[in-house]
Image 1 (cartoon, rainbow, N blue to C red):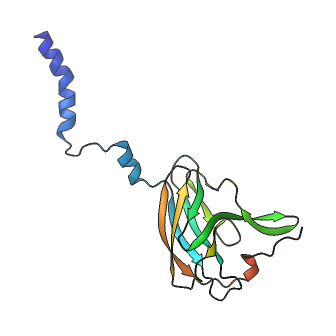
Image 2 (image 1 turned 180 degrees about the horizontal axis):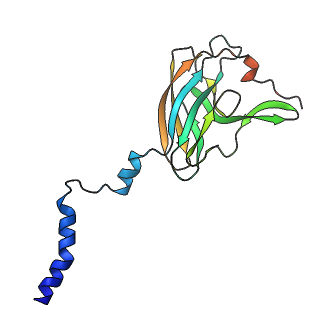
Image 3 (image 1 turned 45 degrees about the vertical axis):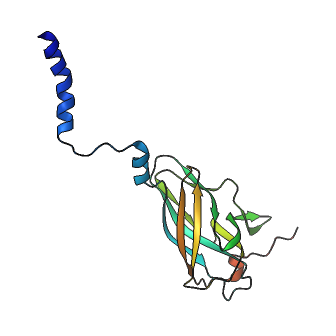
Length: 172
């Protein structure tokens, strides 16, 4: 009798806990897929039609990291460009220059990063065709947590001065 009472005491809570739920628990990998590691918003690519150099342009966007660990944007690719790099604007020898951003773009935990004109951005080089407002550019972003985001990004006109994105090389 003691053995029966002990078995019921152990089994009863397990049986009762499963009675109210018809859902089976989700595996950890499935739960992780539900919560994206980085949210991408307001993405756009600068049109090249009407610019001095139609072989390169830049992509901009807002990146939000809802997680509790920093994540980096480490690379990007696009079939419309022969080469894609992460770039930054930096002061060099007293002049603002555009250069490849070593180590990628950090997106702090529970915060965001902006890829914007005059700051960090994705540079699309060796474009296969000029881009006009209304076109769409496929773009794949790769992050340090081994996730990727496939985007279709609209091309928009940008009217600021040409030198803002295609600075003249700094004399050496």
